[in-house]
Image (tube, rainbow, N blue to C red; front, top):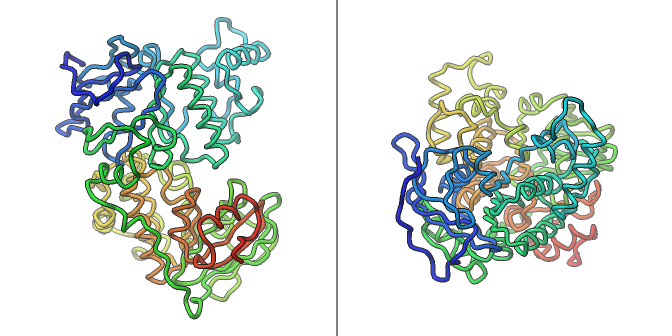
Length: 520
């Protein structure tokens, strides 16, 4: 249980009356120390970034503040009061609200029902009209526009609306400290701008905000201070806006990543590689309208567009997860009819979907069981049978090559950090040695070190002769990975061309406007 701990050293100019003050926070799992004497001070009305690689201790710190790990040592103060985070309810009562990267909303309930879940009031009879009235009062009191009707089903609403619902719930409990874990990971640019306006408004109300993000540019844009963690300790706390991206990356990793993260376009080839897979006139009503696409061997095609442009739908059609109502697919020169993702994998077409938690991994299954799923479809073992020893040997090699931590083939996938889960998803696809690799959001919610590693693996797969298609909300990432681009706007192709034919700014303008780049 928490015990007395002398206050740790605070950075120059640390606030005297902070919203949150952590001193000497330590958390162990068995003999492993995950947090080692962490000190953190978040000023009232300040936006304080917390950054670090996956595995640096950020998630453990967040879960401790949320009351999920009561067996910590060290001191925590909220709004000047000593608190003990025994459980999530206690943490919320003490003024700490955590908005996790995976929202805690019930998809089958309405917006109003989610907002008042656990606060419905007395009475044995469900009164839907009264519930909506109470939810409307709550929203008015908090002063945040949700962007959705209170009677609307939560399922199907955008991540931005889900996030605002979580913020309303947090402020309804008079939160003094709001912890936001990767809040922009799945937002469009317009939604990100709106979120930043909301964050500034919350800061003006004197809420202390802990902002966890792997996007270092946005840390410098929205945050006042930044604390860098590495290996369970704090290595620096400094002003955010005067910190450079290179400086922050070096603090996080202990080494420069400029070479691994820089754009690396190869020259335009004299002749395009073999067309491994093509789509002609692909149509899905309301999503895709006559899309033509060609994937060449040895090339990374970056599919660019705003959320809702049809990018993910195109990925799913090419991988057999969705069927077009019209149009044709060809694979290695022959017409292809895909009835399922399993059939696509057997042909050598692998999809890494955008939602690793619900679409790419079985969180309860072991890492070895997850890793070999695609490879078995591609013929690992005879007649679909493979020995446990072989599975463990192959899985151990993949975990070593991808530097997955912890390196335990028997560990459930759900016990890994988000970045390490993403490595497992990529390893699962690479183990199947696909001829076509389709990657939707390859590095959403991962640190810069893991990001550089994933970029290297994608490029290596293309150089090994695969045709690769990448979709990413991170346009700098897409511009750095793509040899050729295809821009989608409202389900139609507006431009295709080589990376050397367009500047980054011209590509951004094309995506936002739906017009071909001016360079062409």
